[in-house]
Every structure is written in structure tokens, then in C-alpha cells.
Image (tube, rainbow, N blue to C red; front, top):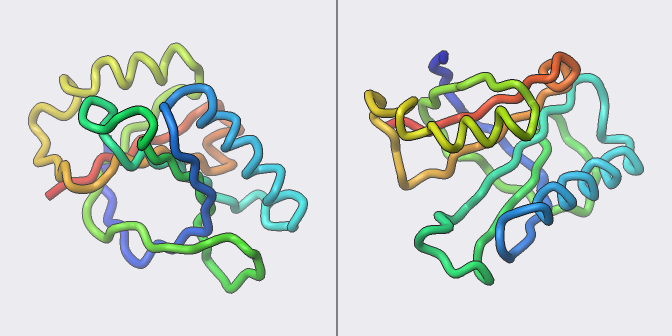
Length: 144
């Protein structure tokens, strides 16, 4: 785990509303196809997956999930944009397999026990091409 400061991160994104699950993966694939068609996907691309609601507290029909691309320069696309909350994040690197990601989520409470987690901000999944090419992804836990 490392600590990283997020500052002035802007994303262009797509959102789906509904129960979390395989449809979130389908949204990510749709999003990547859109980015490739609009020549926005290259070796420097950083994608984010953001579950905006706690499934234990939000009805499945109202759960929001965003997939986004970090915007580092002006781009011409029809997607909505927004900023990611500034602040410190604990970054956990995880093997990008279904089993290891599920293991991360299953054990997250043990991993963050001693961290001052900011529960008012969502946990962010981060996928840079360099990490994905090494079969890795990152989970960014917001801190107070």
C-alpha cells in the first residue's frame, strides 16, 4: 500500500444505474469501445471504475456506477465530465483476476482497519494501461 494525493483530477464518464454486477463490466467494455472509436484510448489512458453507492444502504435499482477516463488535456467528446474529490488515498495494487479482486473486497475491512477512511467518498478502481498490461489494477481508498 502507498499513500497518494489526488488533486484536480477530471474525468469524462458513462454512468449506469442498477444492481452492481456483470453489467458494470459490460459498461466498462462499452466505454472502452467508445474511447477507441473516438481516438481517446492510448498507452497513457487511465480508466476509473467508481461505485457511488453502498449496496448495503442503497436499493439495487438506484445503485450508480461510473466508468471514466482521466482527462489530462482538452479532448473533444460528448461525454459528461466531473472532478474526483481531492485528498489522500491509500492505493492497493491487486492482481487483475476475478478471484483476487473478489478476495480484496472480501478482506477490505482487515486491510483498512488502521486507516482513517473517509466514508463520504467512494472507493475508486484505477486501471492504467501499464498496470493492466502487467495484469494488475489498483483500488484507491479515500482517507480523512
